[in-house]
Image (cartoon, rainbow, N blue to C red):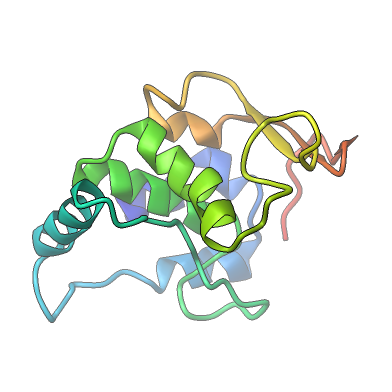
Length: 152
């Protein structure tokens, strides 16, 4: 899924206000240093060599830079799949692998004794990574957060 399609997706638009949509839209890049295919090839080579690949957005509280809390994580997972990683690998790059790399032993997996932070989606993101956008519930510290989309 391209960033432009993500930007038009009603599942994303329902959660983001105009400022954040504009910020997300500002990140369109032509990759002047090379082609996106070269980036994809490097990501796959690193993954196949056993180098941990992590999803990370460096999102700012400010609405600039083209990186938006939440939406950019979905986009990055989609880009990993576009590069050639499996949807399961992309999900692990956003959950288990960062927790392991940053030695955050209380998170990153659904396990007894771990932090109760879960995102429930409709569909099967291990088959179709875009299903991560079908949010149905979010729990943090064992408590369900807001059910309905609200714009930030």
